[in-house]
Length: 319
Image (spheres, rainbow, N blue to C red):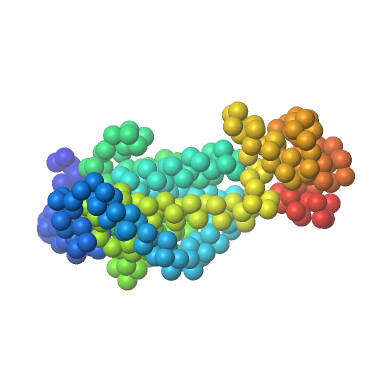
């Protein structure tokens, strides 16, 4: 702890005083008038207050769509030239980043390194809180570089309060390397005192329980991250219609979902879809092009997909 304390000195100003001043003025640390008497409410009343606040989130996210769109465009460009996305966060923010990253491979058949989540305190912090780790500025840079981060990658800092030292340090390091940067925070855009390419700022206001940003801020962050990766994967051709077509048959559920998808798209029956997937080595996208492309073989289907950057519709229309 002494090391952390010493690294938080800056030009003779004790960082403890600075942190107190920063926190007391944050929107995410304010008291919510609607819940000030929540400790004296019935269970039903408590839940109604929580639910009422949660209902405000989608409209707040809607206002951020122009900025989310900018971020998606950055990601698509980076992915298209071999770049990767690195989420960096601490606590709830870090866990949400790791969650979103971990769900991309089974959903979209991506390489596990394409979207990565870095959390202050490492993997242990996913299940056991490591609160002091968010203050380790140098470690933010170290953890980013240890993943092999390069200038062609994209960093997405996640911090409800914006001010998390670990996250800020990682984002600054990435920018210094020439990488594009995104920041997701639940404080106002004009308070984001950091140069980034895109700041996404769903200001959800004070929490039902003061400062508990795993609540509204966490929900808003999850929605934003869902939008970032989902829209990016659609733009990369990993969805046909509104169906996942780059998923891999790595579980019984995904096996049956793959068969159902092929059946719905091609009109085959269960046995026919099973046969097509077997011939396509279990790859939904390939199976669809094999069937709808004129009963071509798997090699030709793969050729057409590769020639059309993996887009099923283009592979079927352009050959």
